[in-house]
Length: 340
Image (cartoon, rainbow, N blue to C red; front, side, top):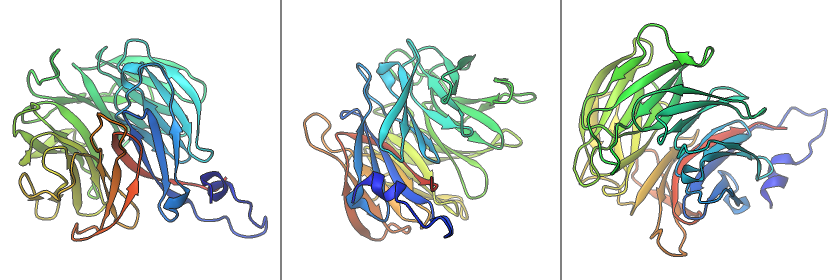
C-alpha cells in the first residue's frame, strides 16, 4: 500500500467522511529528507527529499496536511504536502540558518533565524514574509494561547551559552511584540532548545546548557500570565526535543542520556540523568493520540546507515517495535491528516 493511496483513497460520497490518518513525521538531517509514517500502516511509509543546497534540517512543524521544514544552512524552509508526499514549495530565508518553526493556522507559520536574531512570519500559501527582531540565536518557536513564543538560545559563536535564555512573546495578529509582558526570563544555563504545551496548558521548555556540561533543565511557563512557574534540574547532558502526552507526562530526548520523563502531577523528573530509557543517540521524541511514544535513534550519522523510531508504551515499560527512518533522523512529531 502506498502512502498516497492510503491518504487519498476514494470513498462512497454518501458515506460519512473517513477518520483522519495519523502519521509520524520525522526530519532526517543527513538524508535531507522527511519520513512520513502512517501510525496504523507503517509499511506505507515514504521518505520525501527536501532539496535545497547545503540543507541540514533538524526541526519541523506540521498542521493538517502540511509540514514546514526549516533547512538550517540551506537558508530556506520547505513546504511539504503530507498527503501526496512531496515538496510543494520553498520559502527563501537568506542568511538565516533557519531552525525551529511553529504553525499558527492554515496559512501562517513562524520560523526562527538564529544567524539573524529574528523570526520570520511566513504565509506558506502565498510566500509572503515579514521579520521581527528577537533575542540572540533564536532556535525554537511555539504557538500557544494566541501568541508565538520564541526560544532565544543566547549562544555565542561557538554555539555555547553566553548567559540565560528567555522567551520573546509575539502577537501574530500584528506581527510585533505582544502588549504587556513581551519577555519571559528562564532560570538556568541558557541554550533553550525545545518547547511543548502540556496537558495543563503550561509550556514545558528544555534548556540544554553547554554541550559538555550536565546542566539540562526543564522550565514550566504560564503562557497567559507570561511568567516562569518552576524550573527543574536533572536532565543531564545534551537534552533535546520535548513532547507531551496531553495528560501528565512530559518526555525529553537526550543524545547522552536516552529518553527522559517528567511527571506534571508530582512535579518531578521521574527518569532523569542516569535513568533514561536506553535509546542510543536519542535525538527526538513524539507522542501519538493513543499515548504511544516514539523515541528517535539517529544512528551513526557519519555514514550511510539509517536511524529508527523506537515505539514505546506510554509508561516506557515496553518497546513494541522499531520503525526504519532516514539518515540521521532528528526532530519528530505526530499529526492527523484530515480527509481530502
